[in-house]
Image (cartoon, rainbow, N blue to C red; front, side, top):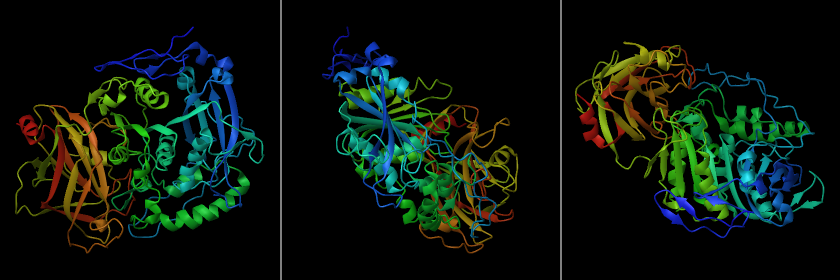
Length: 606
């Protein structure tokens, strides 16, 4: 026997009244608990089907159908209706195993991109009977059904892969519509025997990591009814931000030379006989025409693949997660989207950690979110802190709560470089005039880590605060403004904010040790992201841009360093060495988000 829903105890909020959920559920601490009736795997009901969408992305004159599987608790066979946790992905059926399909990055800036090897995709497997087992262990025993679907053009779903095209948003929308009785499901890919979701309450929550975290955001932008909550983890919310930085062609960390068309090739796993048509209609006619690896400029091709631009449609409550050292999908994807969704009047909660790509919130946080918005239990989650940050050295299961992100006491503090950047110049509060310029020579053979470690270098400029006598808490987005001239018509511009002394044992560009944050820009786009203006050699332009957001406590004994260089071998294109960048020190500044503002930073300095 199981009791009816029990009152939830929410820390700091007292007893919260519980919603009238079915008696089989047990709610404690605002969370749905594992109960035997739901956890009995022998009673679970598994089924697969194809849901008809509202689009025809493979140009065959018929609406595409997407492949779906369902795992639901046994009591749904006798009339219990349950909510759904849903994950969709282009990865479930496999990916292209060839790691040689990336763009060559040895390219002179402004030149046309070299050719690359095309991918063949994954081998099509028509005999798969299950899509995935993800999410099932966590959610079915707690009284949720789990649904998976394969993105268009992958696995046993019809359609073409588009990488950010509208069909990727509308395919999961169709599945949610099916769960609410508004779309048709069929037992086979081309049959007429219908399958209905009579067991579903119609309330859906979505989650997933990386591309699987992007798609919940994508479908949420449609405003589909029934999607009540999303938990995107490390989501790519803007393909331009993923593959470009302020006009600069930039690879996601760890995937040098990746771009939209590479990802298109990588996820191909659908029927082989439709791939040639998709290659022509999508890869050639859309992606290659819009990609532009020569200038990196923003265009309509990119804005159509920007979910931040489409965020006004989002009505689903969002608990979002990201690592501050995620150099694959960078944390600005999450912070900017959170601001946009919050502006809609939608509940937003954020979970951050100090690691890299991926990393879900603790299960308890996710459970509270889904229990509140899918089961309707008034567990007080709306009164929970809006931001949780895993502090340095802490377990990811024990984040520190804050009222908001950035930290409510974070204030912008302007710092200015003083001459001596060939070695280590000073970074301080005093803005001086008449300092003149300092120069660096581009050499992509020198990694950012090598440049930060060097006591002096002709290939970077480095400016640092005095050694901190107390910790300094940075929370928010740093902003850099550089007055710079180039010896050539085009140049890469890279900026790292670092802790000095730089640790000698870092393990490559993705190692968080030593890095506070990073940023990149194309000086040709100083005036507009949409239009590159070739640089006049020797004539300076002012380039102002944000670095990636962060929340980090820089310990006592460290110096905060600003490093300016040109080509970043782990992220940018690789022009031949030799371009000279000349920085006007009087026209250069850094704004840091310091908790406690300038007074806190001053107290930490000798």
